[in-house]
Image 1 (cartoon, rainbow, N blue to C red):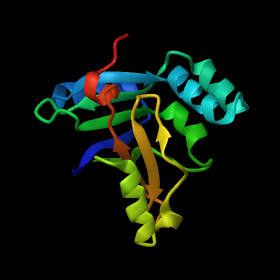
Image 2 (image 1 turned 120 degrees about the vertical axis):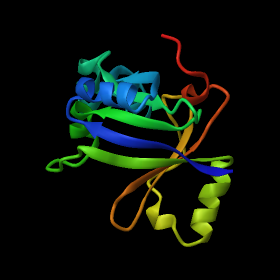
Image 3 (image 1 turned 60 degrees about the vertical axis):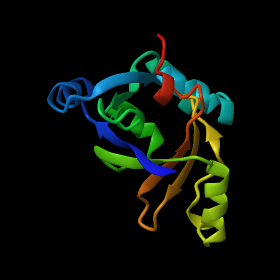
Length: 165
């Protein structure tokens, strides 16, 4: 199986955007990730840095709201808080709007091997990682730098089971 699973959009004002996606488009909030979640995941990779200290300073502030299509379980729009994009993306860029798109695959290792076999290794951005949403992920970019996230859900992925607060 291969299918689109979400679209990520950076919002200048996440609270102002939420009613549009929830009330106008009818998406349901499945779960949120906070800057604390992001800090924990980042510290696993890098240890404590100035970046992770900044993330922790934002604490329980919502970093991403996962808005699910009610008639298409597992398909989302991710609404990103703008504050985090300053440290996630290169300086000097306005990242309001689409940040990336994501695709679900059954076997991420096999997918990565296929990309490499087709000569696409230069487009792979790092190794397969286990995200703070309990989902495996692999990032790629196209020749113009547009970001793609390929994901393999687990039985504990928040996208599958939600998140108990």
